[in-house]
Image (cartoon, rainbow, N blue to C red):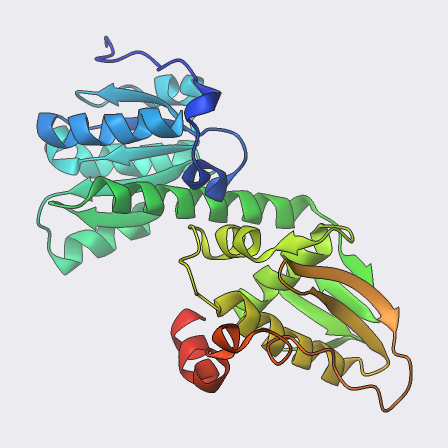
Length: 288
């Protein structure tokens, strides 16, 4: 079946911060859709991100999709007609590592549940903004890549802490530190930097998945909560170090003394940057 649009050539100079949210390399995407207005706007955004992409007017054989070596595919089930469910099931079964996002018209709860249970990673209802679709694609690909890394990666040992990606948790002497998902993603990122200082903006983009808004103190709030849990579970060590005005560095170091107070995160920052502390509980409850 002929393709409506060939893969677009890469233009690395056009890559934006959004593309690095899923990974450093541009993504490879196929879109099965015939909505010309929606595709025109979406294509412009994909070109700015330097993503390689194909627009398909109808379903192509699953073997052809395999040969495309895609990171993700967006499917409008209305374009596929009655065979849509069978095609979706075959696609998800043949490519378990492929991110599948259904972007289609109005649907029932039963239809959405059916699609997700057949293997789709996400479901977005039209009309929708292309930026939201792109963000959902990035999130799906990011989760896929992290799952692959966890399944193949070894545990990280730092001080008294063992970070187990396969279990999405950290342990001290076989006891779980009981981290939330966001806290684990944060410690996994910091520990993986191998002593390098990570700027707040980079941490936010790689953990939350999009650019940090000016004045957002979410990173500081979560670092503070994570540091408190680590030092409660392993009081003889200090793990996360603050580089004021820059970001944070993960490096296990023995505490100077038993009475050593935890290194401040928010308290030593300018007053404007401490405003999140008073609302920490409410903010963390929303973001976790």
